[in-house]
Image (cartoon, rainbow, N blue to C red; front, side):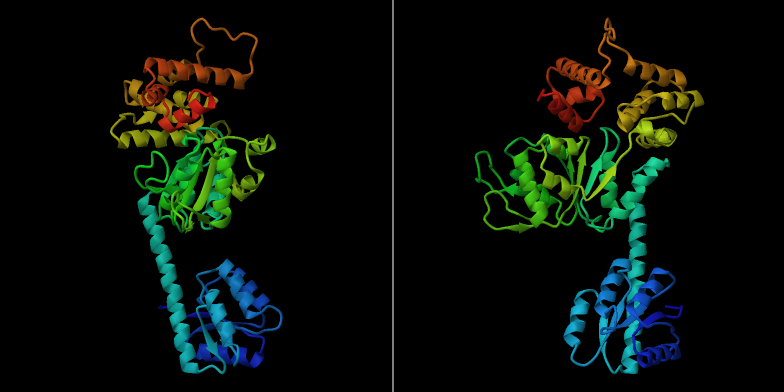
Length: 456
């Protein structure tokens, strides 16, 4: 390190504190002094460059071990050296287990003490360098998948940044098509688990009775049809993140089993007697009102509170229309990169038309519209005529149908959803993947709509 080592010395004895400061400064360090743990915390919280903390273990007021615990929460990469008197070495070792860099027995040997200070400062430098390099690697792996600059989406990004470094369970809420899975992916990307697996499970697609096999795995022959071993989702996501999509569709029996593993961290593979330990960060995703499902008895209250440690509500597109131009450019670039788009710009009138539309299908619908526009547009400029034609097709009533007396938007939309699904299945002779393509949605979402309308 080319710059002077910055050291904070914490001791309630004036003689010890001042002697250490003089020793450090004589060696070329920049030393600060604090007479209590409380004062030390104030200095750390105030910011400024700091490489090492030296603290007495036994002090009046806040003890050295308490100060160490606080420093671990505020600045875990800051190395702390604990000073201990004769007979308290066991306590110092306990402090090391709690995160101390090392300990020194009083009276301090000057040469050994200064060598330890230099090693601790070098450790601090290396930790910072590793953190910087990891950040660069993350940037090389790809930028944030969250597109937008509106106040609503900035709040989502802020919450992601706050919770990602922790291991807290997150509940991602929002309407279908708002980008909830992208939020889950971003939480994983910014976490310490980023180099481990990100595993997504569509809870709505799990057949009743196969929950344990899907989540925990099974051994061959453990039940009829188990012709080979299967790795469960918890094992697949070990060390990483498990995203539970459509969590609200799980049956009560499956909810109880999920709660047990979340509470204890333990589970058993079907057909195996030993207990396994789970190291997984859970992100739950839903477009349903879980509080209503709890009240109606369809979702366990204890599981809801276990999942709802930090809720992140993803806004609907209608509440962040200022982001539409950025999203449009993002989708156009995506299609250009895949060689599926020749469009280079969009007419202001077309942009205005996109801004006037209410987007009941949210970002997924916007992406579908832009993809369709790249196919239909004949020039290299996306025109308002093309956009108007696409949007009017989406909003038009079926031939011969009038609005009638029932204007309940939810009932009308759900009825139209059901009719479209049935028509798509009819045209594809029941082939679900082809029907999903007909409807412009992926197969996972198609499975959700089948279940929603009891067509599975």
